[in-house]
Image (cartoon, rainbow, N blue to C red; front, top):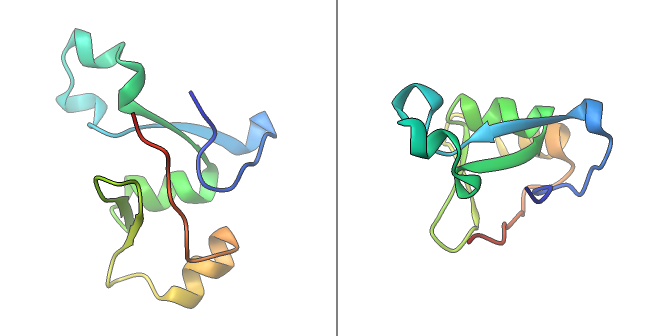
Length: 85
């Protein structure tokens, strides 16, 4: 699973996040590598809570409930993009 967004490689700071929530997955989805993102803990928390997401091209989408300056404080930038399969 590629490390997303920040490039952080410190394993203890990374969390695996599921694109399709685990509770909504069947056994095939549980094992699907393309259903996962490896995110730094702050980004994982924002993603899981719906404050950030990604469009079909991988560009970060920020919720209206998350101020841009807060996003920058939490992740170091407000402009991120993922390379998606």
